[in-house]
Figure 1 (tube, rainbow, N blue to C red):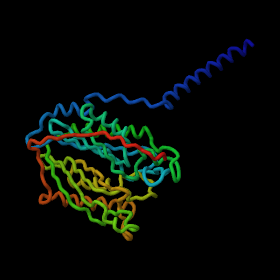
Figure 2 (figure 1 turned 60 degrees about the horizontal axis):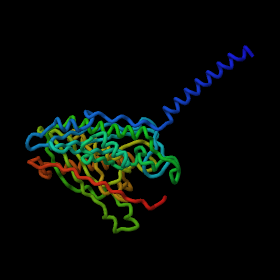
Figure 3 (figure 1 turned 120 degrees about the vertical axis):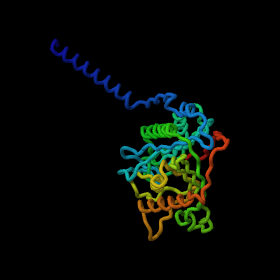
Figure 4 (figure 1 turned 90 degrees about the vertical axis):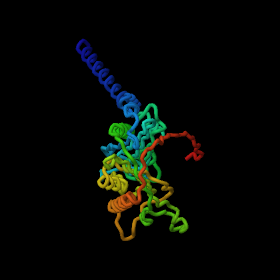
Length: 349
């Protein structure tokens, strides 16, 4: 008894210590993630806006940047069907941002190489970017079908998902990257003017998938390409923003490599040709207008390359001096107007 007592007490002490360690580990790893601290004022665009003041006559302040948001490991890929896990990375994903400021109101456009971003994530991102101008921040996604699931619709499962595909740590990284991108764009802002252009993309570049059973719908797609390019006084490019309506799904459902699809190719080409940062703001792609795969043409990544390069050629042609309109501020002011609407969902499924 005298020899067993100390041994038993040592056993109990060790058990208590291990239990305490296990509970501490669970509290750290298994509990609800702590909300990260709010960034200081200097990490938002507010202080930068105040320091910029009024731009030189005939210009606005403009800056652009991009931040890598490529996942570091396997992820459930959004689009097509649930249960599709990534097996590698073909090309990087980015958060891209353009910042413009007329000295009174800043405007921020963030475009993510993602299928979409939920409203509460957009609101949280806005809060990190600005405390005073939330209506001035637009967060959009290219709707690419080969990036991590950020909506929770393509997690584990087969025909239907049985769980969310969202990785909270990755969503937090996207929020942080978008805010970093916006602040970097604001810090690099310089006097700029804009070039505006509109043109048409080749009709055969995209397809309304309903045209076979309903031929009349074949023309029900928007082939217009709208371009807004910001450049500084020397002509150097700051940002090239393109709007065109087409699903980024050139790779198809069998692809398991992370990729930005044709928007990544388009942005790469435009940045090489015009400098600065490029971004695609997808248009009315509906249900659905997508990349046309020619019967005897390129497939997969070659198809994404073809669409991106062709669209870059279209944009370059539209920005020729004879076709583009130059806009320089001459007393006009920006205005940021927003209204929150709540839409009820009656479908229980």
